[in-house]
Amino acid sequence: MNDYQQFIANVKKKTGIDLAQYKEAQMKRRLTSLYEKRGFKNFHEFFTAMEADEKLFHEFLDRMTINVSEFYRNAKRWEVLEKKILPKLLEQNKRLKVWSAACSTGEEPYTLAIILSKLMPLSQVSILATDIDENAISRAKIGVYSERSLQEVPEEIKKKFFTKEGLHYKISEAIKRAVIFKKHNLLSDPFDVNYDLIVCRNVLIYFTEEAKHVLYHKFNKALKPGGIFFVGSTEQIFNPRLYGFETEDTFFYRKIQ
Image (cartoon, rainbow, N blue to C red; front, side, top):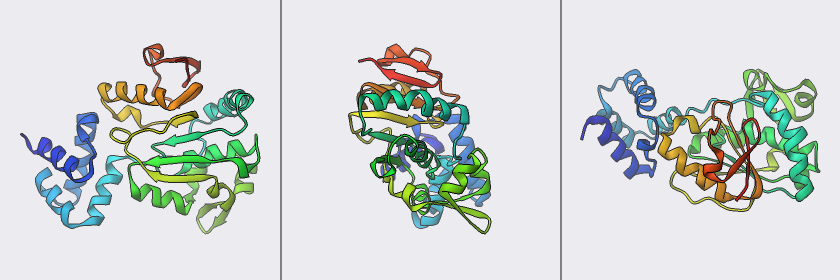
């Protein structure tokens, strides 16, 4: 077993996270740059240090899970969600069950809550937001963001739902109340069922083809018939019927079975 394979085994034993399900070249490069920056010579030294230093362990999780996000990322797709997808879903059911999977630091579920608030009373909006990284979830719950995270947010939305505090913006308490954050590992934890909408964007690209194959089936089972799966703009599913989906719009897939 080489240095990296041993590291994978150690991490899985410690956390339940299976790095073997992630594309090896990308993950190895990202983690090597981290351990070299911190002065370690190999993965063995890095893991030993992580065992003793919780801060380093959280830094590893941050690096592993990327955590690059922003509000209304790829704004045109959110427009399709607001104008086409959600009105159809709301015709079927006035109280939608919504999951933002791999939600990182919260920009995505909060964007969802803002959009849903235009279509229904905010008091009726409830979104489950999950991520593998507890550090990211803690930051999401605080709800404070840099100017860069808000570059796609329309001005009227910024005025309505954000308060400027120095160089940062704090999201409103009403939007925060609409989102419930929980820790969840997509690869190993069970999925709840009967969702009307699942949003999982810009994370599947980091998984191997085998892991993606498993996840598409799991997401399909988690949706109601007719439910929608919304993916990122580099994550088109080329054979959606293989997983029980049909294309509803670009990057939106409807469950057909």
